[in-house]
Length: 364
Image (cartoon, rainbow, N blue to C red; front, side):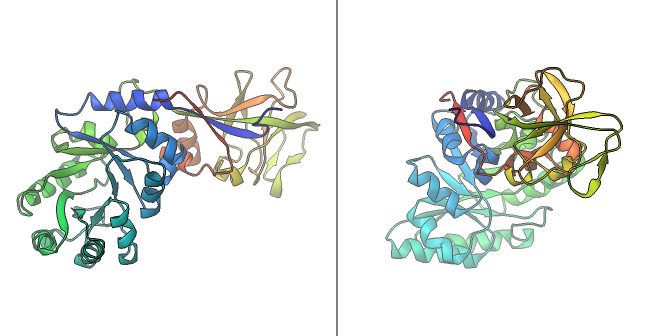
């Protein structure tokens, strides 16, 4: 019996580590490389991806939640892990216990971390984030020096880092330059910290002077380059397949799928694939998306259903039940689907649900 009868993902860990090594070559000597592995490593699988990356290819792992950090510690990872999204004071004890660095914007959370570290007779390391324009997380620039000083006074705490996040380092160079300038003006104000970090994936290439002591790289690690900065050196890490589960012929004028949004203009042969928005395939690709079967492209027609989608295979020969369709792979890229769906590449992979099996190849 085939263990993946309906839909599945292949993850090439060797491609992942290749991509990380490509990025590493662009970093100045001594600059740490942190893999952003939040959101289940952008849908690729948090623990397998982090394990492969930590085996000599990155220096740190970034996660979005304390729970993600705990999962990595539970899997045996000893690599430095930093939680780069806000945490609540109630999460401080877990963060300290599992030796997670935490990015903070307020004294309240820093005090909670300090109290937790004191109770556990241990220490904790914090990074202070300043908001230079994203307006999502980070202290007001006018309070950065004051907060840094207050954090340093707390017991059992080391202010290890100072950071910010670009608004649009991929496509808006003037905005990126303005944020970099604002951030640079604050670096000296907060006093010496071991690790200053500002660059995300696009920032590595569009703000190279900001690479400093660490960079945080996400989307490029997975072989997806929406910014055209790597000259085709990256290898896609993820491919997604689904099988044909049903076939039928319908006459011209017939409508297909829910709500009769698509009407066939000719006698049409339809293949039903065992995948839908319940698996994370975007409903926004209804009558827009494309798959490949036997190396030929075939359009999605009608609304994508929760567990199935329909493809026009009238012009394809020899399509049979059980055949494998490529949803993402060499012939259909994440970037193409993102453009068709009107979203970014990050959403295409991170929305793939956990019920879709991941099959890992290579060890990194």
